[in-house]
Image (cartoon, rainbow, N blue to C red; front, side, top):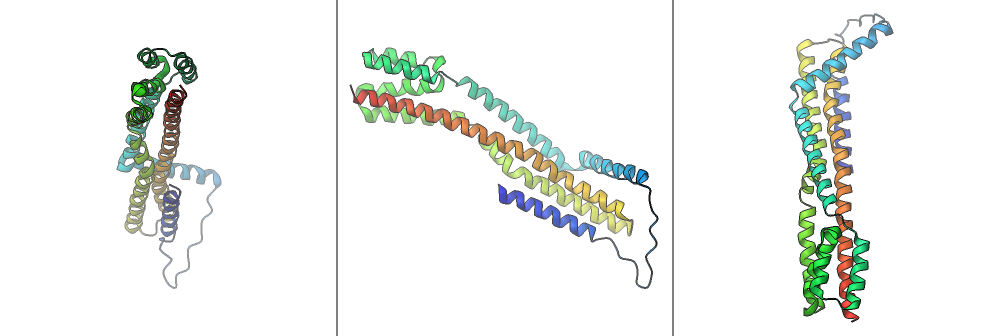
Length: 255
């Protein structure tokens, strides 16, 4: 991800430099006209108007901006949906460990223990423990196979749609870079049509080009953060479930 962001920044800087150097030099033998000083009070509104025009062009005509708005909304939907799913699988893992330890050491009926462990209050860890207990009478290997099957099913459910976040986070900066390239192309076209029209056209072209890159980074960064956070939560939940399944096998070996 770092080298991709470096590529985006490098291309953007290079494009801006080329655009600044694209102004036509004065004709040979002709002295450049003396620059007329512009009061600061007049220059500031002019710059603001130029930036406002650039923003209007991008939000009104640049397709990459609308693509990134769609990407942001899609990523937000995926994040909220995954948060909802992860909240549903939350359980009292400490309470489950306490119950299983006491019940299995007392010799309670395995079917009853598995049924109790599968209750919703124990969440994902309880479902994995309940399935692991199905192999209690068949030996440690069977219990391990049951637990691994349960963990695979739970992982598939928890990681569903996370690949969307990964794809969006990795590729949105390049979509922004595409918008930058389109903006640079438009700026060169404007320069060719208007000739030596001064720095206002150059500034407008640069601002148009950089809006797309800025939006691409602004969308990609939170998406990548959300993906990493959700992936870490999923891994922690699965690790807790695996630890409980290992505890059950250890209790059986000691009986």
